[in-house]
Image (cartoon, rainbow, N blue to C red):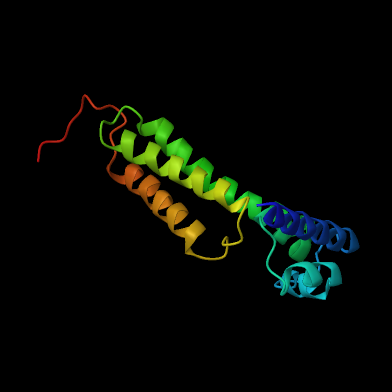
Length: 152
């Protein structure tokens, strides 16, 4: 565990230093791994480079403040859409549980990515996408007032 903590600490230092070099637009997409591999202290201690352990460090290093703001805006839009749908349809006995579960899964997925580097693959986007679809389906089929059940 101590070795893992040291590795994460050194990766964080690499991210901070690289961010300081180009804070607004970043160092370029996909360069974090190269920066870690160029760091002699990291490669002597841990071998080959690895990605930053957290999307904030990685995006800040690669895409700067503009990338972080854009990414957080996208995540915020998705989470806000799901939460607003839940708040509208929370009285619906079906959509209440679906949307609350979708929101919790989405929040969990985003929090997980604060400590991992899989934010460009399905581990983040499938839960967010499915949750967003649930929000749109609730708008189409949900009942704001469950007293008005539709006869099948």
